Length: 205
Ligand SMILES: N[C@@H](CCC(=O)N[C@@H](CS)C(=O)NCC(=O)O)C(=O)O
Image (tube, rainbow, N blue to C red):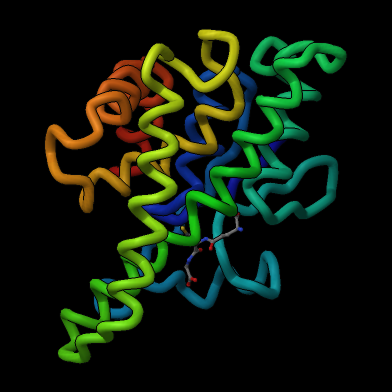
């Protein structure tokens, strides 16, 4: 049985959504962020030294890193959520999976951290300028890519969408409404997936 160690309001939603989509039995162990610091509880460290989420247990092995989980779980339980390994689309699929945790995540997190700094009274001008420029670059690129697409790869739901969903949904907080119409449409499409709706409900309760 797959065990998911899930922190509320976190990128662990990627894996919770995937598990809801594939209908594979799983055990959910929930953790709540600290209301003040927004950090994970120390109990997550018992699962993995980094104390972050998601973490899964599969066949007695502990796996941290959502991208690795996405690839492993899809390969093993839901191969229909990936393009054929010999196809050109497989390269796009892997690229978007890794884009979600690297190129897209860095400017997104810079924005999040900068907002924390501003709220706590320290206005970091360099960070805001840097985050702003990187954020615009990455999300303009993505908006352009999504111009004629409903999903990232093969015009259907794949693991790449589970990965990117968390980042783009959060990024909407800093995108001027109406300025990135293709991203907005893409997020609405993901939000209409039944398994995603179920995962959000589980996350919130
Ligand atoms: N690269 C890891 C990052 C995991 C990560 O940073 N998780 C965040 C949630 S979005 C977390 O647990 N933060 C709580 C903390 O650092 O205390 C992955 O993709 O799984």
